[in-house]
Length: 303
Image: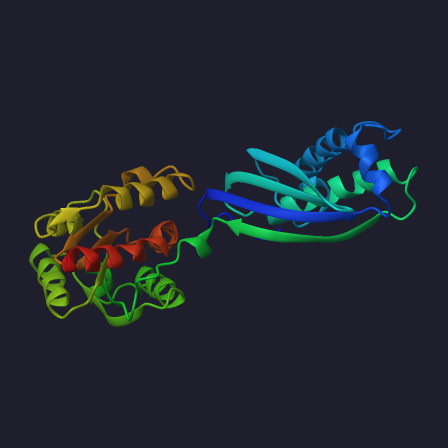
């Protein structure tokens, strides 16, 4: 199966449709009057559809098992057509389109099975996805235009040439994947005055996203949170909490990180872990939805 461990759980909704066409009006009348020999067509087919939704991952090899938190099946009769709508909801890391389509198809097959003794011309005409919601495609930033970012690696070891930077490069890779322009990439030692100077410099240059990596731990030289805390206008606890929650789901020491997020005028400043994995996972936790902040800041400026 496809690896989805890097994804965030969000509300996912999908609605699928199937249409069963009968060949005679008498069949529709028999359904309405509950005269079909095999029983109540809609009640039994709904039950079959509910089972179908829950069994999707057992039958399709690349489908992930997931908690199904709602399934709704509705019927509409239009002349000789029985229209089936199957809605599925979950809060999970991947969507429920296939589950909804599988549910609709099982409902249609069960209707076919129940009606074939009285109507030899029953057809399943189509099964299709009507809509889906949730996931990163629904949370793309619609305001961003040429967002520029600066990446600053804070490390005595790396700035001294004793170690290669990988965390900064992981951040840059994520920025490029989200179409954020890289304005600058530098490596500096763990010095409060220098960290503050660089933050103010890039903000003055109009760089909207200023990302520091490193110095968020608990050693005496880990001073990034202290440095940024003195110049940030407003902290954004939700970003900080999201980063730590995402990390904690993946390893037990993420709670020890002191990641920072806040604004300096119209620039967003992030202080992320210095480990490669910590930096990459922090970016996975908040991108691309964090880019929505620039539309909010722009709107606030115009009000």
